[in-house]
Length: 422
Image 1 (cartoon, one colour):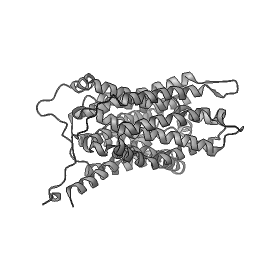
Image 2: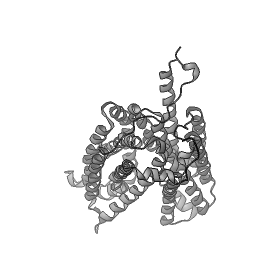
Image 3: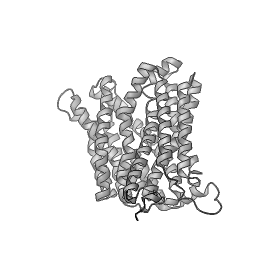
Image 4: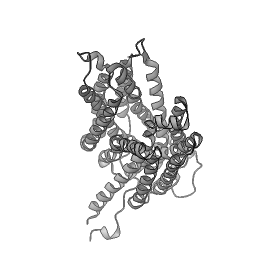
């Protein structure tokens, strides 16, 4: 076996392992929302308390990402990832074992704190070990985990909850995390190339080094615009589809199912396109294309000629929006990881996770301030949410072309001695 063939095969195993880690982290976050009726009834909590239970995960993830920026580039990435992942698995197991609302809250905060670092670490490792010319396809493999979580992870978790109790999804995620941790131990090479010889700098030196770089600051703006574009619209889709479009509650999951399947099918195509014609060019195409379905989703009742919008038309429009949105993220994240200096990429991605959390929260807040309800309970001014998202999308294209990319690897996957050519 040639070194190149071995490297490519091991690279695929590494990417699939990282995708699995992302999958468990995403399902762990997403499963809480549909479990709301069971948990509010079981623990006797209000809707506001349940909302706090969901938000606690995000807040903890954002805070831990800021904290991680002080140490993430000071350790071997493989060892740090395995440590955080095992702690995440234990915290998720604790969620299933929680006997009360208070203990469940503590467990969710712990799961968010450890899980919030996993996404940044996974993207950092892709940037470290995958050459720039293949980084688009690599990101498509890792980021397809979101689509798989939407299509398979959440429905399967709900089936387990319905038949075995609300704790079952958390037990399953913890068990699956243990299996992926073993896979990570086998497939991940030692990743110490970013470590500098000599005495370590003080803990805040890495953050200061990241923030001093003007290119990094532009990359944070780019990342915030990526999140802002969609989250002015996405949080209110369910409300709008039920009140204004007329979909039944049992039809809403079809929006996410079809959107997830479409995103999964298109992800590899977009990844290959990004590597072939360029990350920035592919991102520009997907970011501009997103504007059309983003607007159509918010204007469906106005644009459709009949009194009722058919479910098929709704699914075509919403699926196109999700496909464009996820397709835009593949070259976007490839650009983002490449904009970071390799020596501080871990710190950069940890800070970036906090930037993205803040941008999502701000976008949802802005979207909530724009829309309103009339006397009949219909959502008003939703089209302006899409307009704000469209402006952010266009702005992200402009910022993308200002980024300076570091295309070298900081930690290639080594081939074993016996794989060397004679």
